[in-house]
Image 1 (tube, rainbow, N blue to C red):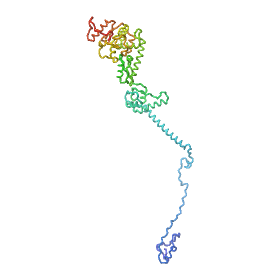
Image 2 (cartoon, helix red, strand yellow):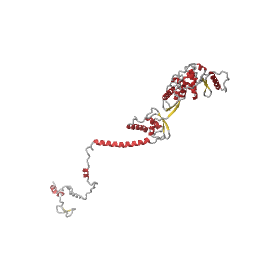
Image 3 (cartoon, rainbow, N blue to C red):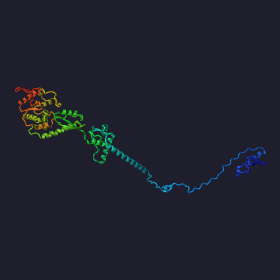
Image 4 (cartoon, one colour):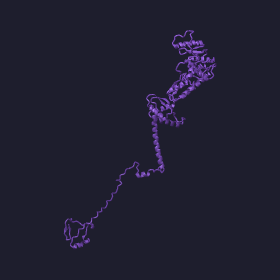
Length: 452
């Protein structure tokens, strides 16, 4: 128990307690300034709070020594530590760390991906190129002249021949590229040709391009009958919707009547040139084989005489005999007196008079009216065919000078005027519906001397 100055114990102090070893923890009041004066004055000095004790310094516990056995180590598969592995790893060379190497590596990688992607695209494109097309049934499609590759593709897609016009354009471009790389001497590769083509069901894009580049277009025919004038021939061509252009009327007699092969979009001028070339070849061949005594001085006169023969008869077996009548007349200096020359002198290339020939027509002189002029007219009156040309060059060996229609589509021939008049009378009776010709001795109506 603590005691006061008079030796008494203070309450609350533990009994037997020893003073703290640290003298700084006890406060000596007698040593405080003014402590004695306060006591002397009999005043109780103010209680000074004790200074706080500094924190007790606890020495740090020694760190436990690490035992080699307690350390946990994860072993690398190689059996080497990380430091050893780092030291043993090869260091990149200076060239590998150079920016140019990095750029080249990137470029190589890009090219590699590009090559792989391009190969896949090429494989896919090739499959599409040879895959069956969408066409269900055979179809004829016209590719007009002047159409470009894209125009052709649009037409084929619209007609259902191909599925995509762009694939067609790409396919043509690809074939051109392949041709140029192979150096096949084909220039720009496939040559797409205008025309009318037949496309088969399910025809592939490759097959469609082959068809158009082959030039095997649909071929049509046009027949020009014998005996038409050049003006009438041109009209026939103009009426054909497959052909194009408006040609000039060729020279009369310069065209060969024949059946010609034409294609859609072909020009009418081309057809006329083909006909003219055919006529020149035929006339030259026939002229070379003409009879030596035929009174014709040139191939042009041969065509003129043949044109008259052509207009006088349409029967093959009569052509040489009709030609003989005119050749015999030429030999005797007789006028030919051919009715078709009257008509041509009046209407020219229009061809048809539209009415029967009148006596006025017969007596009215024209450049072609062989009732009014001597010899042959100045030129052909139509375009004669091969048979008429051959008949004019090699007429029958007869002495006939007259002929007239016999009512059967043919003609009755005569060597004398008297026999001819009888034939004319029979023809007039047929025209009038009489069963028998006029009685003998009854004058027959006048009729053309050579024919009608």
